[in-house]
Length: 173
Image (cartoon, rainbow, N blue to C red):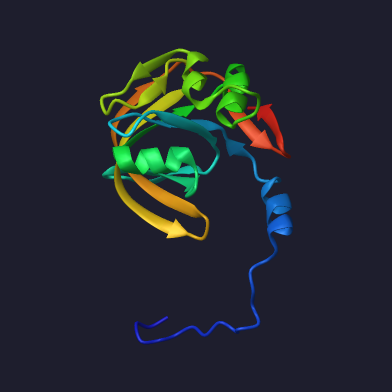
């Protein structure tokens, strides 16, 4: 396509419905992560599968977070976040940070062993890998924030199986 060409998309094309989209996405295996933040605004964390690399120079990842969530608000205010890649042994922790069960926000970090990253974000000691990031960009897409993070530190844990989410269930690889 040349620089001056324009693609016209028919107005009859509409996004699929939410239920069909969720069902289709349930058939995409995804690694399970904990996204955490800490700073002047407070500490928070959530379970996420919408985490991916963007580029390796500079090292950048992105996470997608519901804009109305407490974790999103604190992450944006703190300007930093950590991502911990989970193992099958971390399934209970994934459920806790997904809000399953009755554990209040302030007690969720009592589950698991944590260490502060250089940004101050909590990183799971047992993570297959952890990424310590500073926010370098955000974009709103419908109900979610797409948050870009420049990776300022990486820690590699023991090699092992990864915790996956597939078919609305935890699995391992």
